[in-house]
Image (tube, rainbow, N blue to C red; front, side, top):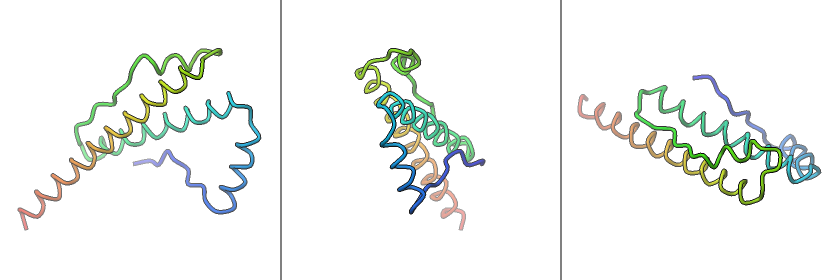
Length: 108
C-alpha cells in the first residue's frame, strides 16, 4: 500500500505550524479539508488492502467547500462528514483485522 500521508515531526512540524499560523483563515481551512480528504482516502485504502468491506461515506455537504465563497457552516459540515468517514473506515478496519486475527488463531 502506497503511503499518502507525509509524517512531519520535531522542528519540521514546528516550522510547518509557524507557516500555517501565518496563513489567512480560508487557506487554513482549505489545507484542513485537503488533509482530511487524504486521510479519508488513506483509511479507505487500508481496508481495501486487506479486502475488508468498508463503504466510504460521503454527503453532499462536502461539495459546498468547493465553492469559492463557502461559509464557516459549510466548512464545519464538511469537516463532520470527513471525520465520520474516517471513523467508519477505521472502525471497519479494526473489526476486519480482529476477525482476521481470530481466524488465524483458530487455525493455529
